[in-house]
Image (cartoon, rainbow over all chains, first blue to last red; front, side, top):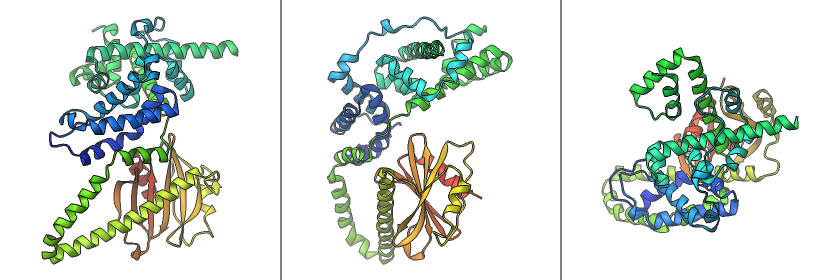
Length: 180
Length: 249
């Protein structure tokens, strides 16, 4: 969503921000895991974005700008401060990302609820990057702007997030198998 | 290039982030390497699973309206009216323009009124415990149910191979005229399709998807019937369902 290089107005803000409402709410719910906190977060995001719209640079990506406001607001909130996890601790070993295995085939077929549970269990940095890439279908460049990290970090974090998700899915499948 | 080198690029390939030269080269490799192509397929399937699972939460209509009201200062609307007042004397000099302007304004007012009523009907149906009077995903059950209840008949599309699911239907009224309301589901969203007899005095002009009250709406006429498709999904989804309905046999 590149915004043409032209003067910004309240009308422009409304035209750009309204279509993002559902996406921002969905993202906020995944971040907060709580409906009330998600609503507060989206409301705060819109209020901040409207107030700071004059600082938005025309010609840059508005969607990434909005997601960045939402994410920063969350990280500065009480809930956000509690959920920050050092990425290094989250590196997963186990399913290799470069080998075809029966587990990979099983994971690819996982049902919606299984994937949702696995996403919920992921640490915040992994969950958010997967949501931005797969759900919001953002490019690496957009993700880099939304998260404020270099593209190289986007690629490596995405790779580790996918690996972590596969691990969670395998754990869930093994749990089911043990019960059966 | 070895399989291991290619496998490190499979994620970027599925994400559409390889250069076109690299993507072409990798595509050629995948056609000849069953292991790599199996992994590429699994990556795409996993991406798709996450995309579907991740679209999970939908804001309430009340919350959406509350936030968007506060993010839409009244100054904007006042500004629009101020411009109209300023432009009015100029427009008065060109009678044809005034006539056209009045017609468009009237049509828009009528359309806004109709869309407002449809949005209310859509929301109140979704909020109701008994959303539909005929509950069925089978168009061959839903369509005959309306026989004898409406003074017209219509066709419903085959949905196999699409993301849409028919939930059911009910009889509804718009401007004292009976019509059909059909509810379709797309992912977690529900979309209403309204079908009424097209009356020339309704003055609603067909339009591609437009946004009204945070809903997307598309309407058209066909065989003396007017169709409205309304929901909080994106315009592409509204258009996709509209096209299915247009081509229903």
